[in-house]
Length: 295
Image (cartoon, rainbow, N blue to C red; front, side, top):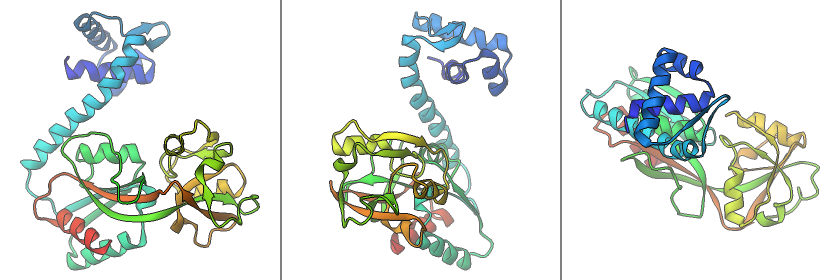
């Protein structure tokens, strides 16, 4: 399968429109139609319904393969470019919202103090975007987070030859409105909250799908979906009673209207890991080493 045809297919399926995909990719609409026809001929199957534009059953299955394949393709190109380019005098640091910690800020300040001319950009990104941008070298070093059993690594998608290094683990707590009946508990079993209303905040709080897996329950109903990277915005919604969320215990210091009750069972932690390609000696490698030393 030609990756260019796959990319066109993913764009059409994502937009639900041949013309919108053409604008995104810089092709004519006729060229997009030709790409889809060529891919369908190659695979011997109809991939897209035309009116309305939507993937067929075979197309849905192909999308499951196409998106990770294209990510690996982009990651391979980025890796080759990185290996043939001189070390940069700048760092683009990608950080998940809950990985933006005081020790990160302090470590970054020390590095900049030692290298006053260093050009640093910090991007706060959702988890999926962060992993993608590290894989494709849009960021030099990523700090990704998630839920895990103590001392276990995060379960990250396969995006190529990336290195992960553990940086920190913190207890997890359920964020409740201050007036919630369980707000004064010393601890909670996660399974006891399966019937509660939750906020689905996949880029900030622990995703609800992971709560279902950890507790073996199909509960944890979504009362509101929060799409953003502002943790304070999420906790304001919790304080107003829109639902619960699972967050690291440290996020609750001095937050009005929110109570944090630790999760006692199952034993789970919030884990932060550094994610990067193999790095030659340079500012990115020094920052990664300093983060490990400070954690």
